Image (cartoon, rainbow, N blue to C red; front, side):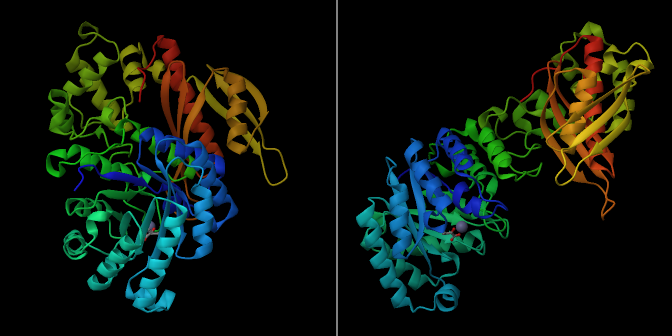
Amino acid sequence: MKDTVLIFDTTLRDGEQALIASLSVDQKLRIARQLARLNVDIIEAGFPVSSPGDFESVSTIAREVDGPVICGLARLVEKDILSCAKAVKPAKRPRIHIFIGTSAIHTEKKLRKSEDEILELVRVHVKLARKLCPDVEFSAEDAGRTGGDFLCRIVETAIEAGASTINIPDTVGYTVPEHFASIFDDIFNRVPNIDKAVISVHCHNDLGMATANSLTAVAHGARQIECAMNGIGERAGNAALEEVVMALKVRKDYFKLKINVDTREIMRTSKLVREICSMPVQPNKAVVGSNAFSHSSGIHQDGVLKAKKTYEIMTPQSVGLKDNRMNLTSRSGSHMVKSRLLSLGYSESDFDVDVFYLKFKELADKKGTVYDDDLITLMESKNNDDFKDRYVLEYLNVSSGRGTIPTATARVSFDGKSMQEASCGDGAVDAATKAIDRIIGYKITIENFHIDSITEGREAQGRVTVIARASEGVFTGTAASTDIVEASALAYMNVINKIARMKLFNRKLPVGE
Ligand code: KIV
Ligand code: ZN
């Protein structure tokens, strides 16, 4: 058995199926190019027969993306296979992936066919696909709930007809690792021609076991994992690419298997998929969540400062991050605070750590998280006035609606003096921030804009978080209001006041991730 596990990415097929809006050809191409940079082995680019747009996406990716095998999906239906063959043809290494439901619930209720009829369909359509393409994958949909005898006959038939990859999907996320292991053991022990194909696994996450099941399948002989970036896919999603890949890398001592993926491209790919698919990632998501390399407790921070391996099983650099993040809160110890001040460019003679730590604790109790710009303000401030916001939003009027051009008028006071400006924009928030920009004159790029509902119902309060870049560094601003445009403008003002303080102290934040 080979010692490399192939990574088959289905972000653009199973993943895209689950999005509210389908992706354009251009968006799919951008993701496919990044997947090629990530060095996945196979890209499943779409389901060509499902729409002219999907056909075009698959054929464009097949033509333009070099490196991975480019694969399209098809049912065991002649027109699907013909369309798929045409779409993947321009690829240097094309693959047709065909599937049919094999569990009793699928064969009896959905397909209304006997087992023998299904076997015949497999034989005929794998052969047809093989005539059109040298690389054919066959999937027994809902294999996790398919009877052992029938599954073995299906696998044997598909291999005999010419499939070189056989995929065993847990389509509805029903299996548990030990049960799934027995399915793979059964196939490997009972199918006589099993050595003629690569056995693949495709798990869904309905019970949160997609990664565990995929890795179990690998431990029991599978050599291809089908997965999607950030775990997107039907319902609860597919096995997350970043999880299975990092598990194989971090636990190479256990699996003793290789992967071809360049894991340093994981973060970049994850961010691109979030942005293009409008599918955010929960902060505590394994590997790619914003907290995945953050340490909050004082005990953990102290441990990591002494030896990273105390609380980090993989390095942030291995997934493409610059470094880990230590969240400074009232739970952080003085050792951590001192280390952060040193990394901000202060030297030990600039502060008395015990005195500074008391000031820090007071601020942390009030604010929760203490950011780098707060620490600098705490260090540099000569008096309490330095903490006050120099820019205050006094007035904001925004008009927007269907058929109108969003326009905003803002009045901001600076050290007591008022200034007013108006601007149009792409939306109400854009118009408001542009009007504020005209008054302030800083060059600011908004990198991330996020709204959370913090109370329930129609009158819910929205908390807006803005992450923005200026020449002084990257700043986070937050504000809450029942009016989200007002909350957005106030969060933006929060960023502006942070930049104003850095300008006042003539300081810059270190470059982040
Ligand atoms: O979940 C599934 O069974 C699938 C197949 C088409 C492979 O997505
Ligand atoms: Zn699936």
